[in-house]
Length: 479
Image (cartoon, rainbow, N blue to C red):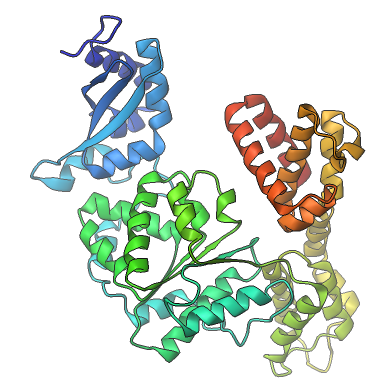
């Protein structure tokens, strides 16, 4: 039996750790994920545990490695590295997972689903991807013709159109990033619809990263990984929305890495979207970050007033006079909703709904808009109060430094970190670009802001005091 340097066997260390885990977790979680783990061996500073099947091994790696590392290290009285290895399931296959329950206790987004067999059947029969499936997942109103182009999205629109016209040759992959509600999804839908019309034989798949993750986990559990791979790798155009949700899901990142390589090497088009530049997303593998950069990254900025007004007028003109809203009322919406196009369009939809109940001969006035949208306008005004200057002021007050230090060239360690935290908060709480944030911090460039964000992320992971302070400021400034 393998012995460690203290004289205890690795199996004994694992049994001690297991007892502590049982005390600190619920019975359901322990029985689901820890009870059947066995010690396979290891070395002086490592231990290898076996899990029944690749699904269980993957789930434990992605969700419980911190629990295992902490308790094994405490049991061994030193830092220990934990490795999880999958062992083959018995002949009865997935039934051996019944100890984990059909609910998959403590799993995110609820793999807690009674319709697993239905989902499983869907995965088995969707390769190659059908035109009907693609049409179900995209909004028919999201086309290039209905996308209003302005200074903040001109390059993104041009790149998306070039991709649609030249699959696999222009800008592959295309990586679109920007804050929520600025049009990333609209452009992805527009690409899909353009290709469906110009090349109807194309196999197109548009999904969210969350769907990719859930289907991958399901395929592992049901033993259908080959069908899963056929589904994603037999496509001419793969569009994945919100890739920031791949963060911390190591096994899913591994699978997508190979899917990406397969498609790219076959000359197939890949389009991705994210809420920030990929190198600002924590816990994404560097090799994926590198591949996302093989093509072109385009930024969608918050639209200016003229673009916002054009978007609203475009929506109204599509109604063919069935709803009447006075120009000054439309102008109010364009001026007050400045950061999120989706929220602005939601406000207009509320007015259109009201207008449909009254005569078109009685257009909605400015006063009526202020009455109908009072709550939304109040929320929007609250969001606008959190601007760069406000964040600089509150951060300086919290750390008791002179506000002028936010834009100064001085770089003492204590002041530099506070300035970096303020930049981090600006990126999290406003829709300003990296360039604009850097400009407002004494004319610094976007690279300095990116470095500040990475530094604060690192400090928050390694220093609990910094994490508490930043979390407090985030909460305070978000109220």
